Length: 299
Image (tube, rainbow, N blue to C red; front, side, top):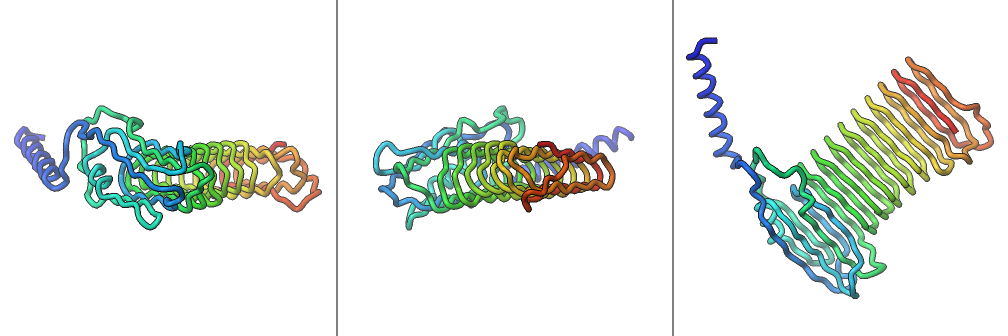
């Protein structure tokens, strides 16, 4: 390519960059600002937490030191997130936060996570929330200590980490990213396009659907229904329960609970299958299907 053509291409690229800067507000570096705010409420006034914004933070649910409660945000935040905090409301039993402005695209940021950003929800002892719902297009979340009737997380890109969560219904939707959960009491429904799903010490049923990625569930006390296109599945039971795993390309490993006395039903179109002999003393079934891959079930 001639020098003139290279120069013309460079001018075009610069023009596109300047146009993007003017349209999207591109900035370089860490533009976050230190900010804190607290909302106080009485006794069981708070029932629901609804947030729709792009931020990464540790969200911790703790026991309040008295009969009242509070929500506190502290750390470094993007200016548009700070604006959403300023406009957040707590009324009718619901704390609601909504980000109305788009974030500026940033390059050459020197921070890799927002673990210096924290949201604390302090509740009177014994108080259980009704609903906690978080929506985002790009966020990394870590939730710990939650007791609620419903936990619903919807994220396009990022990561989700759950620790010590108690909720009869837990719905997780993540287009691209990893999910890690530990010490969970409740039924989980997980939908992912790409990434991984890892869970440990799960008391409840789990339904997982992933297009591309690995699923690993250990110390499971509940039923499992797993659907995958490509990846691997690893499940370890602590108590007998039905398991149904089906995928196209990948290996499946299932460690049946010591008290499982049902039926093993495994089939692979292309791959090795290794399962124990079915005792058939119960109607529970551990079922595994894969088009290409190996299946191994142990007890």
